[in-house]
Length: 154
Image (spheres, rainbow, N blue to C red):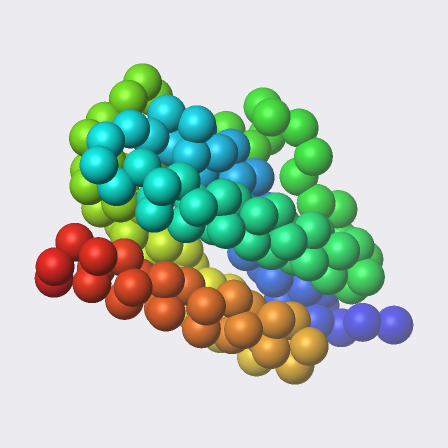
């Protein structure tokens, strides 16, 4: 039978994972939005890149939700829960492509911060599998941030 500390750690870990589920659900839609509404001289480059990013987002969403289920949690599964939990904002309207790239960098940086926090909670809960999953996602996001910043000339 789990101790109170283990139960508390488990609940905290589930909250962190559900934050990731909410953000990846929203981000999947947001990246799709950007992909659809892009225009301008870099359309072909960015259109392909954002398709890659929303496809990857869908994969992370599924992996995190399945991990949550495998440890006895219940992933957020409604749009209402997603919107009330997510820490990133929806895409609205259209923007200049570089503004969308910059916004994506900010979203990814937010996710990296929250992934680090979730990894710490997973470590405290002695859940190395979850910790490894989150580190893998963070590593990919770090690379995307670097590449997108390079695209913008930063």
